[in-house]
Image: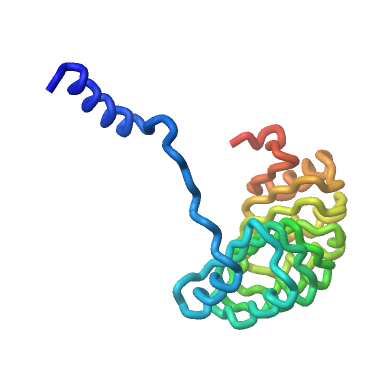
Length: 206
């Protein structure tokens, strides 16, 4: 074996150990399964999660979620989920993690989701949720993480947020809530972690 060949054989493993890869190595992410296939897996007990990030799930397909009684996690990045679909989600007893950034629900739809007995994490965006609608979340005893985005909420909504006793982390983006309003919330709930428009508030950089 030549010296140059031996050096090459030694260098390639070192690259791999260091986290590097050979040039031009293609990286491919697995193709997302269809909504119906993910639904089938949940119904069959093969999965507890549905994540559809690349396309819109139709209203007719969303009604099929009533069969996914063991569903624990749902993420629909592109889907304008409405109140009838929210009512279907609100009836799923094991659902814990709900991520619906492009929803079109009203306060009535949010109230349906708030009924989930094991709801732990809610990330929701909708132009139709109002300050008064946030009150529905106060009675949920398991909600720990809340992210509100692209909603016309004002500081009045924070009065209800302060009363969600189980809440540990509160993120909000693209709302009409103000920093003074959040400062008041933190006075009321000093242990609550607050993240506002992609940044921590002063004193909450941890």
